Length: 386
Image 1 (spheres, rainbow, N blue to C red):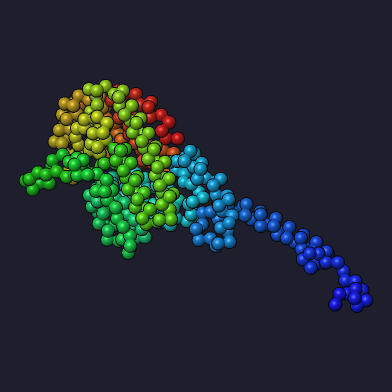
Image 2: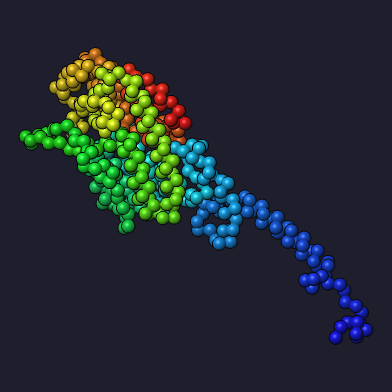
């Protein structure tokens, strides 16, 4: 029965939800406070939520609205050589990748971004051909999901150590074998190991040709995407952006080389890391002056070097800081030709975190040294490294 039918006192007025007005007011106030707190928390954790694939479903409705406005749209135009988009990159890497030499490690970092932890087996400032892996190298290799080699023949000791310590399910990738057809392979000079016969090996220094480095970037992208399908889109974005920068390096190298007098486009090198570079950009490569077994040159070999440098009639000959500078300075003095000890094929310039500390920085410095030492103008390279 209704209240007014019984003569009882009228009930207090209730709202549409059946709650007294005073209770309703308290509830509204409480919900308002909670809403403010939720709003503040959502706004302060956008990056962390978008960067953590393992987050619970309760946060999923906040990230789509905020992630497009963060770094993916802007990172390629800020510092592409060192930064990676933040919203699609986990806080913690999802893969570990080993790389045989520092320039290759940089290429893997450029493609992998924050999704991949990269370790270089050969450290900075040592010869990548003769380096012997340490126990800490073994520990890093044993936890890698993938190990990328410039070539398995570059340093057999590194290759053997890596292959012997692979964890189950890990892969190895020989980038030269994967990206350079046999018809494009250049043979090293013919030499003997004292057995009476002579033979030659494949020259494995293909990465000094930026066009081959572009192929490496694509191969790295493919392999990382197979291991981490969730990151495939990010790897593709990173690879495309970096490949464009390598293309710019290639075009600038063509332009700078055009300023070198044609008669001077000869590279006399202590160690032949430059045959692929020379073939692409029109330099004749003479040498190498270094012994095939990487030993210190004998007195007779030094005399041969002097004659080679004199006979080449070049404005300069080239080496690197990891080579015996005193010997080569003597060759320079006796031949009357300047020695440029600044080329690098496996050492990155600067310090980690510097803009030039990467493959691009290394190659820009190399081309600048080559072009200017041979009488050309290297200004086409200006601005390639931020």
